[in-house]
Length: 235
Length: 392
Ligand SMILES: Nc1ncnc2c1ncn2[C@@H]1O[C@H](COP(=O)(O)OP(=O)(O)OP(=O)(O)O)[C@@H](O)[C@H]1O
Ligand SMILES: [Mg+2]
Image (tube, rainbow over the protein chains, first blue to last red):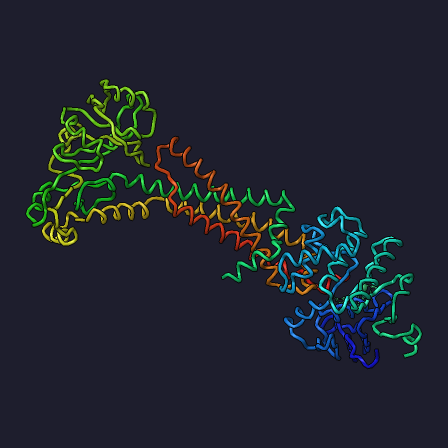
C-alpha cells in the first residue's frame, strides 16, 4: 500500500475564518495522507475543526494555504469552476440526509449520476434502482422522503453518494440522527459497499461504537491533527 | 438545437416536480398569474375597443379623400366649413364626386323608455352611399321621407322591443327636440364613449332638425376619385386648390387623424396603460412571492446539489423552469377567462371588444417576462445556498 500514491494528500494546511480583527485560525499545520480503499475515522471534540477539514477536502470551501491534493489535483488555489468539478468525484453523506423532498428515492439517487451528464435517463434509473436494492430499499424506490424512516432516508443518502462509484466518500456524523441499532446498520452498509467498490472513506464521528470499521483513526483537537490523542497534547 | 432538446428530455424535470409536489403553492401561483393576465387582457381589450368605437364611422366612410375643417377635432366634433369647398374640389382633375356629411349630437327620446339620451345624428346625401354599410345603403330611399331616421341597433340602452317592432315593419316614432321622427329602419355599428349610438338620415332631414344650421356649413366632405387616379397625388392637388380653412386627407390619413386625436386627448391610453402596468406588477409580486418561498424551502437541498457538483447555472435553470411552467399554466386559464369576460362585456356594453391573435401573443410574452423577472429576483436567494454550510 505504501508504494501507491495517496488519494488524499494534505501538507501544512492552515485555515482561517473571518478577516481583519475577527480573523481566527481554525486549522493548524494539518498533515494527512489517505490511500485508496482506506476507511479513516476522524474524531475529536466539538468545535475542533473536523467539519472544516472535511469541507476543504470536498472542495466545498477554498483552501487558503498549504497543499491539499485530492486524486492528484491541487485544490489549494483552485478556481471556483475547478472546485465544482472536483466535487463530482466525491460522495457525501451528511448528518441530515438532505434528500430532495419533491423527488422519490429513485429520483434522488439518480441525481448523483445526472450531475456527470454522461448517462441516459434510462441508464441512470437502472443504476439507481440497482443501488437502492443494494441498500435494501427495493420496495421503497418510489417513496418520497417524507414517507421513509430516518434510517431508510440515510440509506437513500448513502445510495445517492455511492451510485456514481466515487473514489472518495466524505461522511460527517452520518449516524448522529439515528438510534443505536439503525446507526450501526448504516455504518456496516457503508463499510460493505465501500469495500466492494474499493472507495476511500473519511468519516467524522463522535460515536465510539463504530470505530472498529476504521483502518486508521485520526484525532482533531483545537485545529491540530494527530494519530494518537496524547500526541496532540505533546506537540 | 437537437442536442438541447435531447438534454431537456434526458434531464430530471426538477422544477416541474417541485411545483407538482406542493399543490397549494402551485395553485396560488397559477391563480395569481391568471388574475394578472385577466386584468391585462381586460385593460388592453377596453383600450382597443374604445379606440375602435371612437373611430368606427371614420372607418366605414366610403371615400377616397376626406375634407374636414382645419379646426376639426374628431368625427363628433368636426366644426363646419363652407360647402363651396366641395364644388371647388370638383374642379381638380381626378375628382369624380364630392358629397357633404352633416354631423351633430342630438338628444333623442328612447322610444321604449321615453328617456332622453345623446345620439350622433348624421345627415347624408340619399343619392349616393356615404358609408360602407350595406344595411344603410339599401334603405336610402326610406330616409328621403321627411323626418325619418335609421337607427343603430347596437346602440347602448334598452331598445330591444323597438328593434323587434321595427323589424316587424311597425311604425315607431319618437321625438328629437320638438319634432316627431319615425324610425324607418335599422343598421348596426355600435356605441361609442360620447354617444350611446347613432342615427342616419338625409341631409334634408338633418337640416330640418337643426333649423338654425346653415345648409352651406358642412361637417365633412367625401370625395371619390375616378378609377385609376392616385389618391396621394389628387389629395395634394385638392389641398393646393383649396384655401387653408380645410384640410384634405386620404381615407387612411383620416382614420390615422382620428386615432391620433383619441390617443392624444382621451385618458384611454393612460388609464388602461396604468391598469395594464398594475396587472403586470401584481403578477410579478405574486410569482416572486411563490418562487422565493420555493427557493427558501429548498435551500438545504440546493446546497446539497451544489456540494454534489451541480453548477449554479443548474439551479438557475430550475427556477426559470418553474417560471416558464407557471407562466404557461397561468396564461391558459387567463386567456379562457378573458374570452368569457370579453363576451360578457360585449353583450353588456355593446363595445366591440374582441381578442385578436396578436394580443394573445403579446400577453403570453408579457407573462413570460413577468415570470422571468420574478424568477430573476428570486434567484438572488440562491446565494444563500452555500454547500460549505450543509455539513453543520
Ligand atoms: N463559517 C464559519 N465562520 C467562522 N467560523 C466558523 C465557521 N464555521 C466554523 N467555524 C468555527 O471553526 C471552528 C471549527 O468548526 P468545525 O465546524 O469545523 O468544528 P467540528 O469539529 O466539526 O465541531 P462539531 O464536532 O461540533 O461538528 C469552530 O470554532 C467554529 O466556531
Ligand atoms: Mg462538525
